[in-house]
Length: 221
Image (cartoon, rainbow, N blue to C red; front, side, top):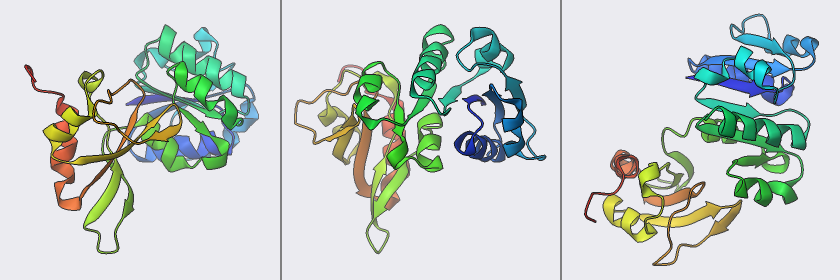
């Protein structure tokens, strides 16, 4: 996958190196050309000097071929504007914005942009937003038998009841993160775009649950 990152500070440079190490092509955008020194000599991706929400700059960074975009500059407003341009103007599927003010998180989430607040930021969290291609264990019992995992689901599940997802996967949804807050699922609760589903399951069942979530609901059900 090609991934564009806006901001080459400590967060952006670390994210760029981590993504390239995983085999992805990466382009980093920053207004300050000296910031690219943080990438190191071994970084093989693109270095684009410019404003991260400028469409021509984004095109130079390969946004039209990108599968993911991360806005991790030092400015909340710049990050959210750039994230919206990436999603709304270029149709990038996986977009995430770093913010410094957690009080703005709900507003940004309502705009359809997953946000990561500085107070709880880690590289792993940002990677999970950009590459939601598998379950991410959040907790496990001492024996490793039972896990709490965040499992991505197919878009076809949006608008369907959580109960249907549980029945199809044979597992139990522990809680859902919606608009930045944890919500306990009610029997008739319907999945919405942007929901993060946390599942309690046996480790041995992980692949089966992932497949059911990725497949989508059966027609006629």
